[in-house]
Every structure is written in structure tokens, then in C-alpha cells.
Image (tube, rainbow, N blue to C red; front, side, top):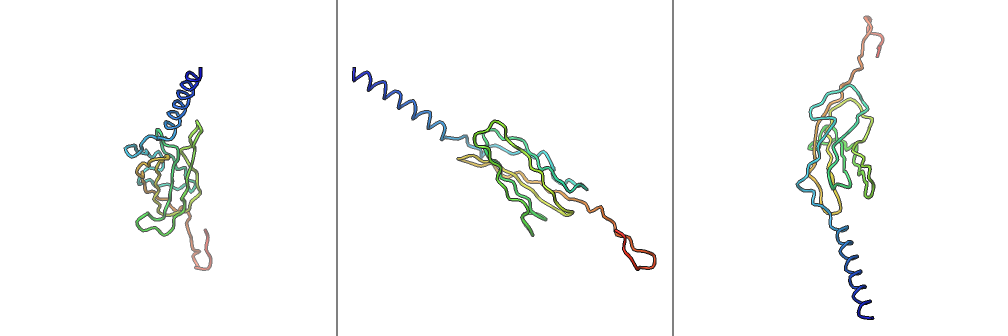
Length: 144
């Protein structure tokens, strides 16, 4: 009787151990790739509200998004440096809306889980300044 109970408890303990290990071992993301949806590389726009969007990466639980001006090699400012995390949710967010200003930008995003990361997917874009300055004929006033 004690022997059967011991065997059942051992099997139960072994089952829990295997299930726990499966939860801790995560898929390797190094060979996966984030696909940028928008803004694509070399986009020009007049809109200052930018929706950064990308495709979901299978097994990716988190996303790291960064935006620099004018680019990452010569960054004057890192405008966005955010982690978007969805550890146990069914709905994964793959976009971020942000208000910017006219200028040149580069953005990148990568996915990661507890064990690995994808490479960054990177794109450059420009927001064109549409304001025009007009000077009066006498040169005594500005009209924006």
C-alpha cells in the first residue's frame, strides 16, 4: 500500500517537474524576424502622429521599440525607448502611436522572450514640414 502511494506520488512529482520545465524553456527567437508594417523604410509624410506597427512574432512575448533622430548612428535624441510586454495575454499589441515633429527619424523594433531576442528591424522616415513663412512686401511682418 505504501509502495503504491510512493509510486503515485513519484509519478505526480515527475509530471509537475516536466510541466514546469516546459514553461521555463522558451522558443529560440534568434532565427525569427520582425516585419515592419509602418512606417516603412524611406517613408515621407506630412502627418506628425505616427503609428508604428509591426507583425507579431511567434513565441515573442515582448517588444522593444526605439525611435531616434536623425538615426541611431548619429543620434541627437532617443525619443522612444519602450518595452511593450504581454507575458500571459492572448491579445498581443504590435503598434504604438506617437506624436512627433518635422524631421528625419529612424525606428527599430525587436521581439524577445525569457531566453532570446530577434534582431532589430529598422526603418528610416521623414516628417515634412508643411508650414510656410510668407513675408509681407514691405518686409515688416511675418505670416505663418
